[in-house]
Length: 398
Image 1: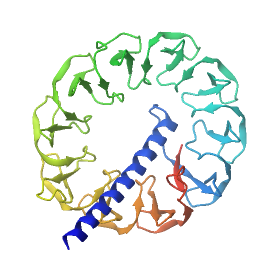
Image 2: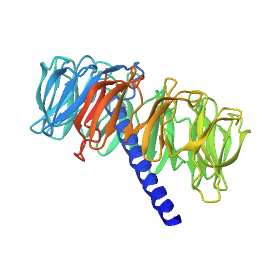
Image 3: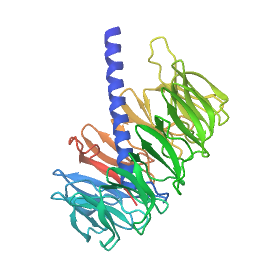
Image 4: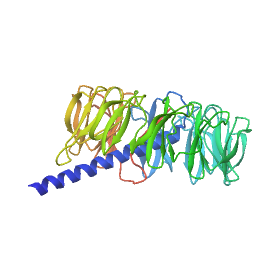
C-alpha cells in the first residue's frame, strides 16, 4: 500500500512539474515576443497548430489566418505580427495580409514603432512600412524601451537612440533592456545597474541582478548571498539570504535554513520562515506548503498577515490572477476563487491563466479554450503532441 502511495505521489510531482514547465515556457515566449514596454496588452486570439503549421483564430475560434506558417504567431504590435515561412520572417496584420515582405533572417515584435530585424547576420530596425529606419549594422539588437535599445557591435553592448546614435557607448559584455529607467550591464562576469544617461548607480560587483526594476528595491546576489539595493545603489537589506525573491505587493520571499518566509522593505520579518515552499504574493495571497513528516503535505494559501485562508489540499497551483487561481488535485486541474471555492472543478490535465476571461485547457493530447464558467468556447481538438508546440493553442496578445 505504501509503495502504491509513493508511486502516485511521484506521478503527481512529475505531472505538476510538467505543467509548471509549460507555464514557464509560455511566460518566457510571451515576454520575449512582447518586449519590455509598458503597453497594456489584451488577448487578441490564439495561434493554433494544424498539420505542423501555424495560423490564427479569434477568441471564438473562427479562423482568421490559415495554418500556413512555420512558427506560432506570438503577438500583434502596431497591428503587425512577425511570421516565419520557409526560413524567412516578415509581418502580417490580423486579416493575414502581408504588410512587410518575408525577407528577414530574424524579426522581433514592434516596440515604440520600430522592430529589430536581421539580414545576412546583421541587425537593424524597420518601421511599420518595412523601411530601415536604422541600418542593419549591428551584431545583435534588442527592442526599444524608453527611447533606447541595447545593441551589440565589436563584441560589446551599448545603447542607441531612435536615430541610431549611441547614447551609451558599446562597452559591456552583456546588457538588459531598459525597464523603468534602469538597465543591468555586465563586465567580466559581474553585473551593475546604469541609468539612461549611462551613469553607474552601483559598482559592477554583483553575480546576479534582477532586471525588471519594477520595485523600489532591486534583488542582487554577491557570491552566494542575496540582498536588496535601492535605485541609488545603496544596500538596504544586507546580503544575508541564501534564497530570496523579488518584492511583490511589498513583501519579499526569503529563505532561511531551508525554510521560507517574507520580509518587508525595511528587512523586517513579517511572516516567519516556516514553510517548506512559498510562492510570491499575488492579489493578497500566496501559496505555501507546510513542513510535513513525509514532505508531501499539499499547498495552502495565506494572506499577508500569515493567516491561513485556504487549507492545504492542492498538489499544484498557479498564482492568483484576476481573482482566480488554477490548482491541481492529484493530476487534474481546476480553478478556485479567492475563498478557495471551485468555480471549475478539477478535470483537466493542464490549464493556463485566464486572459480576457478565457483559458487554454488540455485533455489527454488535445487542447481547447474555456471561459470562467467552465463552458467550452473553442472545441478541445487541437493537437498537443508536437514537442515544439507546448500548447496546440497559444495566446496571442495585442
